[in-house]
Image: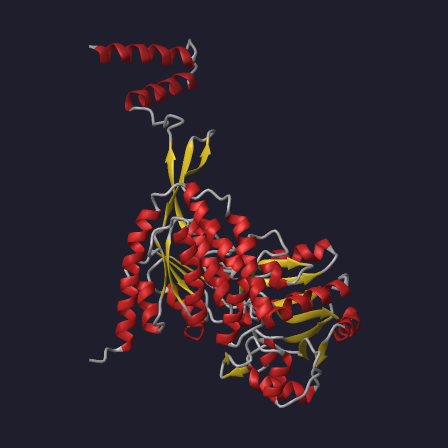
Length: 495
């Protein structure tokens, strides 16, 4: 008898969750040292397999470049691991001796991890590391177009963890990905928290599941070039950031907003470093393939400038690193103003920083609220104004937004999941880490007595004393009166 594929995928999710639950209960009883040994082994395995897994991702999805996928895998295996390896996640993690409060880490239980096709292997490695560090089990739901590379990455993580002492069944991956399977995973009673990275619909589904969820929104990232900027450095950082893995990281720049005073210098520098500026006809042809309806055309995602140009029926230089189109408006009718996840950039010209501020907000409101903003500037007052006014959770200054947003070139916590806060309808604006995957319980000792209202007898005496004082008839002090009253009350109670 042929079984329904959707029902099979749902049953698989239920089976995986049950195995994960059993394993997580064993993991929860392990010591900090045991947990740290397991996570260290997983990071070493990810580092050793970074190139192979990156190649698998490109081969299967067609997105990005193997060399850059390897770098992303290494970023997680080294930078993310380095940031979390000494984090306390077991037992009493903090003691405040002054306030006499202890904080105790309690794992959520099972993490449902939704994985995108743009960054599949690095995201699997990342979510496995932070989940196990926080003593959770994890069940991975891969994008169907990235199934094989996600399964292989899961296998690498699972084998390394189990070899280091983790219980079997702790790290799982769905083998029959479907919308039904993802929904079952997110809503099942055994799932405790959701880490959702993917399209807007998937993130909304995570937040609608009834479970605690960390979902991340799109990142239509503008970068503002102030007239005080070091143009050479700005161009170098932007091109390095935008061309990395052909723009598949959601924190990559999508539009340049430049002060008119330095526009010509910026354009010259961009051309000198390999940017190709589209003429009106080329812009129209490329723009016609960027979107399908109101959404991004997946065929342009993570492709080289030459491939995108070929799809549009135009020719660009073989050494072109990025395609740039000048724009004057923002909206779905202007395809270069949306998030493109490819080496395509819009260029806007503004008269001053106030106009630049407004333009950046427009771009964020179109599809990147709460995510990331870049600014290249040497004027601290302008930098502060941008930081205070922009609806973005990460303001990256004088660095590429791809690397600055994920914490590779800034002091932000290294992460592959970037919260967008209330601006983007997310629960947090943080770069996600293990600290987001456990509950903190507090043991609080009494440190003071609670002051209560005086009893009725004391209130009557107080009123009488106040009356006598106002009439000048009180021959002794208030304290002496109160002491007499207390003595009398005490004698009455003893009888």
